[in-house]
Length: 455
Image (cartoon, rainbow, N blue to C red; front, side, top):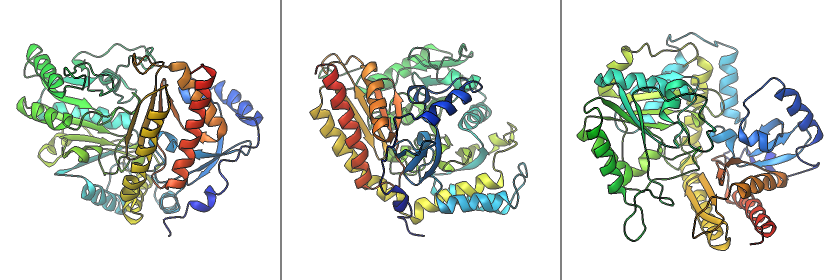
């Protein structure tokens, strides 16, 4: 199969035939919304209804065709309906759908392939059907490893929507993700480094990583010493707006964790499996977590996630009743195996590095050219643009974020809002031509909003 299988279906996009969202999209959305509650902000801002997708193209029920800069929120990273992955799932859908946690031929192959691409001795695996379940299992595994009960996590990280996952990730943006829940006992939160908005800065205004590590050290010492099981965080904040830490952060954090016998638990559900040009985002910093969770891109749309621990902690998985009803079913394993093989066979990591460098250059030029673009974030195909009212004050420009999102969507770009930070997660198969096309739509929309606000 040619690695350019997707290009024919991308011809002619974007193709907008009606006012968007169109009549049928609005009707269908209103009908669905009578029953489906708690819709995401992106749906509320632009209630389009999609009918099909192929590669980097999405088509709505009114016949409008869009360039995908979302990948179904970091999920369909290898393109919608990749033939190899679709065929693998279909094969097992007609052969064996579920066998609980019994071994199957496809599970054996999937596990071997997954462990082969992970760094270090991360090789004790359990499979699940969603990221939240994997995170919950990681919490239980951590407690089983060291018989400690408490966790430290970071403000504005995101780890899922169950009680313990929410306790790791209580949000601050307008209580959007508070879920009406109080954080569970034993879960503590600290700030994490944001180079654009540092809580701790050096005299020259640049971020001070050592000050964050010192703060964590003091936080641990003043707490219940010896009862922190794990430090849990994303390598890159996804929901928080594509926020990358300084390059020295994770090596120093791992040293701190090792000093206090605290496990480093990294949630790579969003950033892992090639999104940043490496199998794990943590590979950029040469740090191997003690526990890692994977998902989203792992099955390219089919629900499959994984929780993996280092070999020395494998026994912990025997203590926590780690299996699940749907985790590791043959269809899920087929999707995961095929996805990993596609990444290898189509040189996806190299494409992400190459086109990712183009994305970064374009975004940096956008930063220089536009008064409301305060900061840009880019590593591979994990991208963000932060809009501000003034580059000096860095005041977030929430209203502009919503307008730019809608304008670019109407031009034919399916993508992701995050308040005043515009997020992009294009399919990893995308080339520079379509990457430039998407960025052109975003930049045109930013210029239009700037004009409307008198910049």
